Image (cartoon, rainbow, N blue to C red; front, side):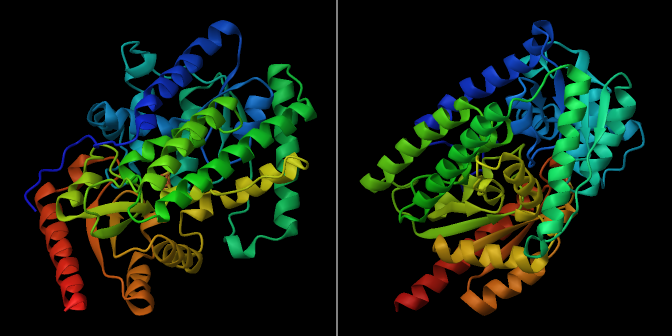
Amino acid sequence: MNANAKTKTRKRLQSSKELGRVITEYYMKCTSAKSEGIPVGWMPPMNGVIELFYAMDLQPVFPENWSPVCAAFGLTPQNFTVSENMGYSRDLCGYLRNIIGYVHGMIDDKNSPFGGLPEPDLLLTPWGGCVPVMKIFHALERRFPEAKIFRGDLPQVPIEEINDDHIAYVISEMHRLVEFLSHATGRRLDLDRLRETVALSDQACALWDEIMTYRTCIPAPFSAAEMGIMFVMVTLQGTQTAVDYLTMVRDEVRQRAADGAGVIENETFRLFWDNIPLWYNMGLFNYFEAAGGVMVAETYSAAWSIRMDPSDPFRALALKTLYSYPMVSCVSISKRKEMVIKACRDYHIDGVILHRNKSCAPITLGQMAIKRQLEDELGIPSVIIDADHMDARNFSMAQFQTRADAFMEMLAAKKQHRAS
Ligand code: SF4
């Protein structure tokens, strides 16, 4: 394969292009919130706090989501310099190093993308996730001493072990959070409004699942190169904006599937990407296309495949909070193996790209076990790509090309052998 990977993805969906408007509007809302008297809360993603925020007319902000924005705009090197000069090791999660560098550096630069992030009035820490994400929020507490702090507690249990006690505990944490928000902001939660918000969230999840289902079609109507569409699942769940946008995506994808419109003219190999993308080089997803490979599925999209019952909104939010992060991480390696194997079956995968992510142990752990099981159970080969979701210094294009090219040649030889 001689094709040079581009730093930007080649997108085929019209609705992916429309995403720019949605992203701009979201960040404009974030920056204008303060002047409109709307309290701003910073929080980790993948939990049920976002729906509470929208139901109480508060503005949620996700520092983790800001990191891919920084990567896309080429701002991570300067943020890394700031955090590394403060003593944060290069071995730590790239999200952590980027956001710490940002809040101690360019946060006051109003020329930063979308006007930058507004400082938090509220910090919701550390509502689940991994140790680095908790540490990010501990550092943010020190950086923004004026912010009011809620320290949520979450049992970190594998999906298969979640029981009624865990659920009851997280429901009680949700109620404690509502009390905190009411006290801190003077706003009250209306239960009907919460039900509506959870119903919108559930509609977004249903649309998400339907969109992903069309990717099982051969040829696949879109690839991982369009994964930016999950922006609405991270930042806008529980809003009409997310539902409207995903409806547009669904309609376009459904039509492409009905027309048999694939990503490339001759889809020969269907590929699966394990782990987080390289946010500074999303063009890698297109790299495989020169050899007939299309990235039809990925680990990350599973995080949003959760249905929610609006008639019992606190339970729905508790379940989302408990399930979302373990759906993509190695809280349970056996569950993760099971999910990757199932995805490979559902999406008719020929080969798997295992991104061995230097700065994300929670998702990288267990990849060798996944590799073995893919071979043993499904006869699906895989290749390991050493890289980093945020730090381009931990990625070698030459090494990537050597491994990717050899892998695609091996897939081609395997196919030819089967045909003969
Ligand atoms: S899961 Fe990985 S990428 Fe996400 S915050 Fe934790 S270490 Fe970083």
